[in-house]
Amino acid sequence: MHQAHELLSKILTRRLEELSEKRPGYSLRSLAKKLDISPSHLSRVLRGQKGISYQSALRLIKELDLTKHQSEEIIQLYKEQSNPKTSKVIAEQQKQQILNLEVFRMIADWYHFPILELLKTKKFKHSEDFIAKRLLLDKTTVTVALNRLIELGFIEKKQGQYRLTDAEMFETPDDIQNAAIKKHHLQMMDKAKDALQKQLPVVREFQSLNLNFDIASCKAAKKEIRKFVQSFNKKFSQVNGDEVYQLNLQLFSLTQEIL
Image 1 (cartoon, rainbow, N blue to C red):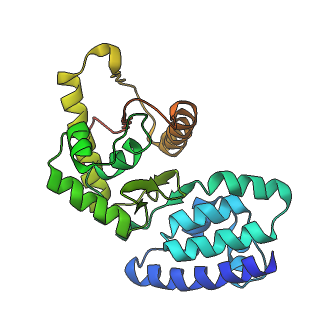
Image 2 (image 1 turned 45 degrees about the vertical axis):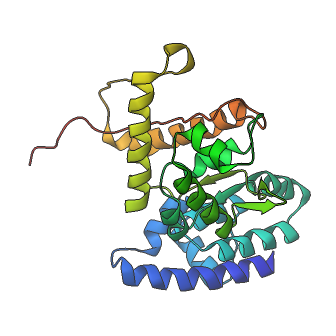
């Protein structure tokens, strides 16, 4: 794993320097806490003296918002130099891509990811008119969206047919304030409002819960929610489903702190 450790050290050092300039309060200690390793361990990783597990490397990729090229370099080296057990884990998790925020900004409008899912449905037709009708969009919007998804490498078009590339699931880095991510969530909440008004209860589910909550539990609660989303996706996502569905989950405070 020596090469993987050296590459990780090089990329990590460069990225931390960039982040320190953008976020003066950003520290090695805070990064180590998010990765669930000790600051001394992370310091040795920076010097190329020690490595980290594949799972920690994935968390590092997300936390530092590394480019797609950097992420692929690290993952490939881990894959080449890992034991059979780790190779199996890597093969599973390679289906999930961590999106660079600059890329996500270009496809933040709500309809880009549903288009990717629509391509997997049983009765999909390879025409812009079909996509427009299924997602209630105008044809021009669909044309622009498809071209953008092709340019960014999410899909390809061969002999008049759209095909997904290798990645199966995408997510953005966690716990980051970002205008594009906010825009996407706001649009999806608007879609939820429409569904509540127009769809029959038998084909949709809306739940809400008020609870007395300890803010110190927020990190653990968010971890549970993320685990549930991954589990739900694994259980119910179909290769040849009938429709494209959206699952929204929000956890937020209803009370305002009094200063």
